[in-house]
Length: 191
Image (cartoon, rainbow, N blue to C red; front, top):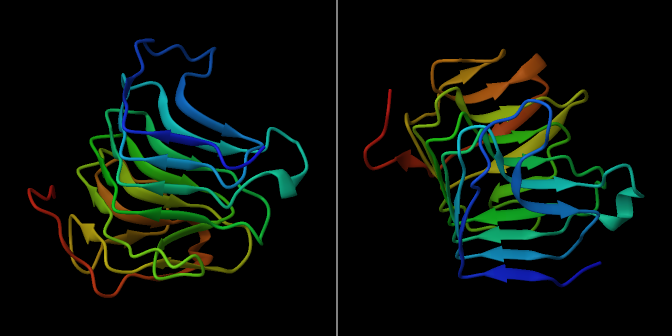
């Protein structure tokens, strides 16, 4: 399924945390070319904001989505990217991703956070997420474009293992090459 759009809503997940059930506000499951635009996506510290997933369907049925102009906060994870298709990168731009445990979690790095293959302008604010703003865990070498974004620190702090202390970027296994030039410190940045 493609060309779906969710735009202009305030969506609050009323479900409290339950470790036995998935709690998600926007599920892009086996969807490509969807647009999630100008929404407020508010969680309850246990659910997830946006999940991009194939649910074991064919990889070509997912990715190539646009996530722009959203305010994503108070979720366990703001955005989880599980896209497998290397040809369908998700465009993420002009979002405020804050006050989640993890801002963005991606295992295969099929995201353009700024000036990558989809033409994302960046403009994302990754700030004040409790554990880390970005958690990247690719198993092979990959490049992430995250230029022209606002962070808690500039240059962003980078660790190679999970952080519980607000690190900007966790680059697990140091497998990702991350470009973050042209960034700035977010207004009201946390340490």
